[in-house]
Image 1: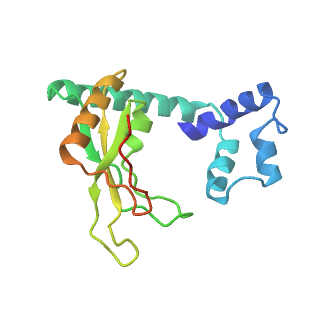
Image 2 (image 1 turned 135 degrees about the vertical axis):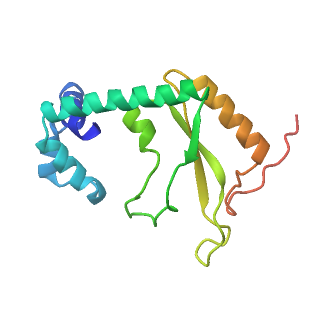
Length: 172
């Protein structure tokens, strides 16, 4: 959906905002964008809000109804899953196999919090942080925040990097 909506949304934003460029096409022509987004913005430039877009809207609605039915039938406040299927990639590389797409595709709220760490490796002596995602019903952000806060307090998975200085107690 986002690629179909990117061009009209960014063109409207750039035209109204007094930016030095007025369209996605001008951004692409300038070459002044990060290479990691090049394929996506070029694809977005070629798309129109046509029958392909309308079909995707219908499929999103079907998925939304399916997720809502599962949550209602199973009496769930949230669906929980690992945020990534694989550990994060090196800085500058493209992340692949992201589970977090369910929130994006449905448009439902979600929250990602620390879910633990992978096993240590030579390049990650503490392990790599692993995220856990909670997906909720529309307008359930307050419930998701409560769940996430409770999970974090109970598991204590959050660990600051070794470079974080110790916090000193307040003198108050």
